Image 1 (cartoon, rainbow, N blue to C red):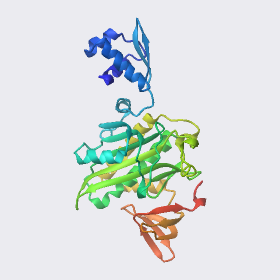
Image 2: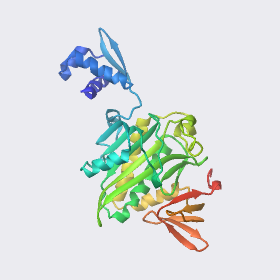
Image 3: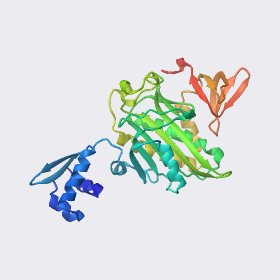
Image 4: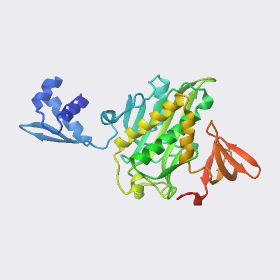
Length: 330
């Protein structure tokens, strides 16, 4: 009902709506109208009240609410079902729970704060209240499990495009799916993809995306202050998170449809074009503690990184890759 009150006020395009008209159209009491208006104000909506004219909508907060996101979406599948949380342990965990319970493809879990967010290799993900984007998307591609990494590459391409076009920030992809500021090499985005599958079929894939949008240098804890940055820090201006989420879901849906329509070659080409890793000298640290150095030459159709070493070509499926510093800034 609160969403209906908000929608009614918005339809008046800045004009006043009397309490009586709201009561009549929505079939609620004046007391209920007042309570819904107060609830909206507490969330940050600016709504004028005049004892004769009624109520007037003036401005919405930059809060990632479904009623704010849905009107902005251009997607056909992604984001048609949105689960919003002011605070949550992990959007990926909630998305996996919903996926296992049979939620529709394209379901989005989004939160203002993640208390237990995590990135690749079990690392944590910093999520300051109201300044970033932490979201997870449920996908159900009809592909064999061995092709699941394609969704990871597609997500990196989609995020790169959304940030480049929406925020105008020059960034690139570090294998497999981190998005870095090109000039400083500081991390702007982390992507974590998790899967449930049978031997020959994918049940679901959850793509978790964390973006540092409007954080300041002071917002970051000391342990990551030197390696992380936000879009606002790089560009010198804040961004509307709602608009960025809409742009991101649009790009992600387009990239995902290429996977499901046998156009993955286009994703590979776009990933290579945006890559900061290919053509760079890298240090690779594999699970278990072993490591080596070499020249990153390419990625294969399964997303593995191909690194040329004095002993021959190495195929990296998992691990941590560090770029030669001179690669950045180009």
